[in-house]
Length: 115
Image 1 (cartoon, rainbow, N blue to C red):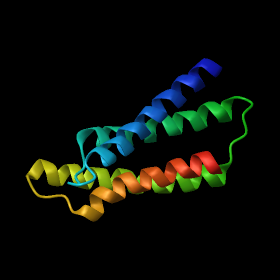
Image 2 (cartoon, rainbow, N blue to C red; image 1 turned 90 degrees about the horizontal axis):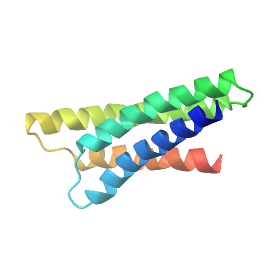
Image 3 (cartoon, rainbow, N blue to C red; image 1 turned 30 degrees about the horizontal axis):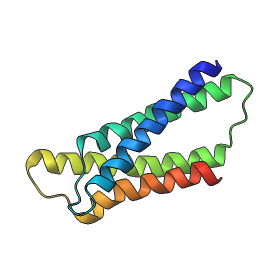
Image 4 (cartoon, helix red, strand yellow; image 1 turned 120 degrees about the horizontal axis):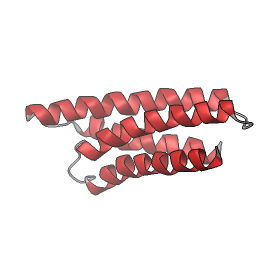
C-alpha cells in the first residue's frame, strides 16, 4: 500500500508541476496550456485516490484540509477548462483567467506543504 501511495504522490506532484510550470513559462503572455488542463485533471484524480488510500490504511486524513484543497482545485479545474475552450475557439484567454489557474494551484501547494 505504501508503494501505491508513493506512486500517487509522485503523479500528484507532476500534475502540480504541469500547472505551475506552464503558468511560469507563459507568465508574460498568459494563456492556459494543454498541460495545465491535463495537470488539473491529474491533480483531481490522484488527490481523490490518495484520500481513498489513506482512508483504507492507517493514515489519518485531515478532512478540513482536504475539503479546502478540493474547493481550490475545482476552481483551478474550472478556470483551466474555460481557458482551454477559449484557446480552442481561437479567442484570447484573459490575464485573470490564466493567472487564476497557476496562482490557485500555487496556493493549493502552499496549503499542502504548510498545513
